[in-house]
Length: 275
Ligand SMILES: Nc1ncnc2c1ncn2[C@@H]1O[C@H](COP(=O)(O)OP(=O)(O)O)[C@@H](O)[C@H]1O
Ligand SMILES: [Mg+2]
Image 1 (cartoon, rainbow, N blue to C red):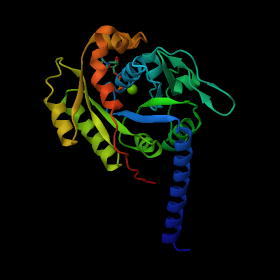
Image 2: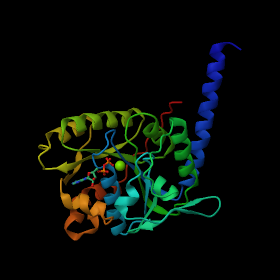
Image 3: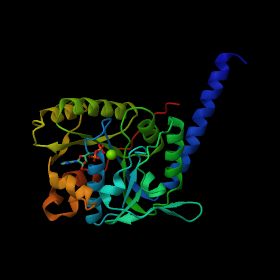
């Protein structure tokens, strides 16, 4: 066999393997009406804060909600959701614990809260994410919110390819650099055939500057700024305490436009496969 046909054969096998994984994940998530992602290539912009508060706000609205923390390296969602219970198993499936009406799965929920660094190659990350997606028993859910890993390489790529997403929320802070990385994130999502639901400007109104950068970002991505969440120590303190701000009467409104945007129907996303 020539080198070229050998390469083609390997690519074909890799594609077939991927399609099988995607099918088993789709079958496992069949009881979920909508899966949406919260994403930015940049760390520290508030992806987890937005994902957790949105999930809690949806649950307060009477929706059946799950939260998948797909940030394998820094799985902080259980901290912000105040969930100290570990996931259990029935021998075959992962059974998520629940806090504030939200079912949650994360590396911390699976392995216990770790201070040790997880230093994993891309292939290990992909295997772990595939396993979680294919074996978690979520039951019937209205919405599964996925807190995406940062970057624009292997981990978010794996998630965009494997998960049947309805749409992606792009999170940024007002600074130019955060918006630049958010633009890269949005462009990756578009290249992968994903729907962008909108931009969430987080930590708005503080000394970071006005909202022009976020507006420009949304325009470049052909979407809108759907929420401006203020820079507010109550939001971080309540996260640290494990009682998300969206549970408080005076903060619930801040997350309302995100909830409204997630409840709207969207066109089906495409699927582009990079093996
Ligand atoms: N709107 C906000 N106001 C104040 N602090 C915030 C806000 N959003 C997030 N934070 C804080 O900023 C830090 C980073 O947020 P986090 O959600 O972990 O970001 P990411 O998941 O993008 O890395 C956390 O300490 C969080 O409590
Ligand atoms: Mg995070």
